[in-house]
Image (cartoon, rainbow, N blue to C red):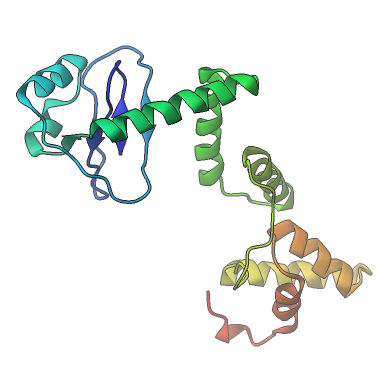
Length: 201
């Protein structure tokens, strides 16, 4: 990923998926720029003076020692800086401060980790996901989203109770489709399929 908390070009930090790493060795708040790039990046080995500069800024010396820190080309550094400035300018036009953006990123992380336990929480999570997304909600092309065996069992049990109280099957299907973000035909198949031992997640 690309990292920077100083004036000047960013660096490339290799992040292994198997373990967490410490990028900065030091205390106190910093104005961190961090970006996971799309596609391949060409890294440049650190020159001695650049190595000394990064150590002075607090980059963890162990990362440099392991060869996990690389420089970027001047062209890429300039491009990243322009994108960063454009993002900050647009955020200000939208009435957002750097602190606001940080809160939004944190909220997205917590929302991903949140596991709803009932219908109200599921609907609330979907609403917040749509609110925090800059893209309009749309139905994905191709195979629709699937739910687990346990969730399918729960839907059938709830459907039985709703039918017993007089609810119509089409109404139940519509409620579950909205609640779970599923297609109507998929919900119908779940409720009609009573051969439960053959369910697959």
